[in-house]
Length: 138
Image 1 (spheres, rainbow, N blue to C red):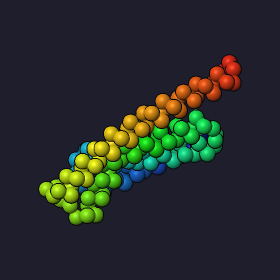
Image 2: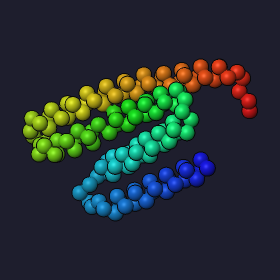
Image 3: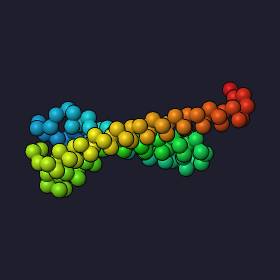
Image 4: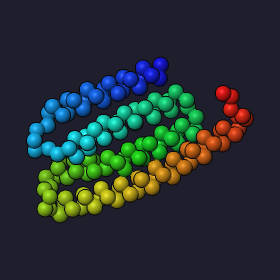
């Protein structure tokens, strides 16, 4: 079941990448394509960790889910902040754009720190659950 689950996500990613590559023209660089691919992979990661937590319902998987959410927020803060600045009508020279860019950098740093701490808690919980259940069976 896990193989079918992962295969369906990889197929969806490949189809979306091909669709995005077909929509872009010469004015876009490879970095913009990679940024969109990164957002797609982050969405897949988010769906995967939420489904994993819902299947297991343990504290360690809950911490892992929140750590992944914090990491995704930190990695996609550029998209959110630039989207908001576009809604506000800011261009590259305005004060609003500079403020939003500064906010994006601060959000990224704060959520990266939060994800590091949450991953540390999750891994320590996994280790303590392993010791609580005794020796592993292979």
